[in-house]
Length: 125
Image (cartoon, rainbow, N blue to C red; front, top):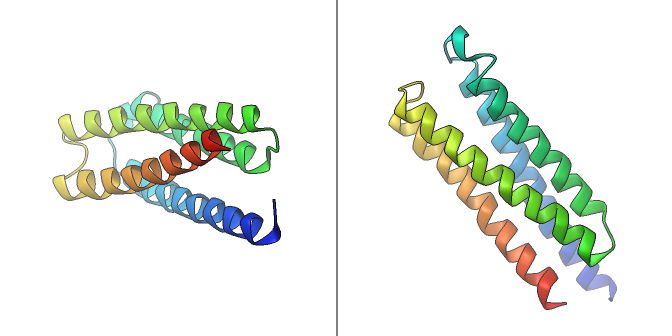
């Protein structure tokens, strides 16, 4: 692998990392407004999905073995799918507005699209 390919790879990894951090910041701002009774249930699940996903993202960025990288990327995909469900539940229970739901969903979808491209590129190699 030449240096330009490595640079492009690191830049795309960095973009998904930055986008994921935006998702965490936004999510933390939103869940502060949830009712206290949800702090140990839905809020805890949302935060768990977010931080487990971040951990998997960091592992995948640092992994050199293709199989390891794919394992962590697939785990991240699962966490993002769980997060989508949590966001949908939040909207259903009226903890968030339609605008919050759309913004949150857009952030997650953007990351999922980047992730899908990354997984595809790993499989092709």
